[in-house]
Every structure is written in C-alpha cells, then in structure tokens.
Image (cartoon, rainbow, N blue to C red; front, side, top):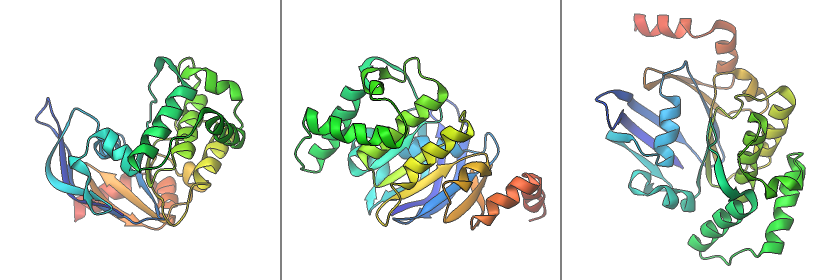
Length: 253
C-alpha cells in the first residue's frame, strides 16, 4: 500500500510551494487516476515519489508497504518495487536497450536475493514482451530512446514496466503523443500487469486513456491539493464539463 499524508513540496532553488497538503492512499491491486489542469502539481507528485532531485519535502510523509519512502534513494525505491514512466522519457546515447533492461532487472533481483537472469533467459523474456507490444526484436539493439518516436518511447517504457514487474507504478501522462492504435497497445501492456499485488497511479489530462486503463478511483488535483475524488464516472464528468465547475465549487466552499 502507498500512503501519502499531508505532503508539502517546494522547489529546492525557489521558495515556491507546489504541493500543499496531498493526502492519498492507493491499496495493492488498485488503479487510481489523477487528473487536473497544467501546473496543478500532478507531475511534481510523480517526481517526488520516484526520488527525483530538485524538490524538497517540507512537511508530510509517504509510506510504501509500511516503510518511509522519502528516506530511500531512487535505486532503493526501484528495488522495493516503485516504477515511474516519465512524461518525457530521456535519451541515453551509448546505452543499449538490452543491456539497460537486463542490468535493471538483475539489480532488482539481486536486491530481493534472487539469482540473476542470464543472457539467453533474458532474451526469451524480452522477446515475448516485445511481441505483446507489437515491437520488433531490433528494438533491443537500439540505444535507449535515441531517435525514437514519441510512441516508441512510450512503448519502451511499458516494456520496462513489463520486464521489471514493480509493485507500484506511476504512469505520468503515458498517453501524451500517442495515436489511438499506440494508446490501445500501451494500455493492453499495462492491463496485463494488473493484479492483486500491483498498484497503479495514472496521471493524465484526458479521459480517453481511462477508457482503456479503467481506474478504481479518480482524483482531481488543483493548486497542489487533491480537492475531489470519486469513481471512474468522475473522469467522464470532467470530459463533459471541463474544470470550470471545480473552480466554482472551490470558490464557494
């Protein structure tokens, strides 16, 4: 279970608060979606959960399976089963996808006390996942995200997700830049990992992603706080009405 309590975060180099008291609990096996306008703090929340530098937690706590997530280094968080799919995946020139994935997989297995996967076993696993994502085996020979289209980058992140099998995954605007076919394929990859032991936090602007990855709960983030929560129908309401009604509701509260 991931539990966030009264989380306040600011940029380290600026005296500017971004998250202003976020409370959120995602149980194992649940899929939660966060929606909100630009600048509301959605991506900042994902960065803080993953341990990205440049952000300072000034108040509050984040626990993951009973442990203090904020005290862990990014590699420790990954070893514990936390995964972040970036909105803008970074390029890694000179680093091949196969080496990157196998190293990441074996690092996590080592942290769990499990034996490493040899090259042949890894290739068998990877090729099976590539087939699911309708990707060529040649993708393993290419450098990580170098020269990739937006859709290829997002598929590669879902390939990483499927190979590493985290306990908790944050998908930060995974639908950004995807056409409808790529969106369907990426969503199918995510849905294959849904199960009683895996939690997802899906960050998105648009309801269309949630037609494929159907959430258990939907939350609206506004000005650094979660101000409204509901079932999957809340995403449909946002799609129909936009965010003006949220602003009006907050102003009258």
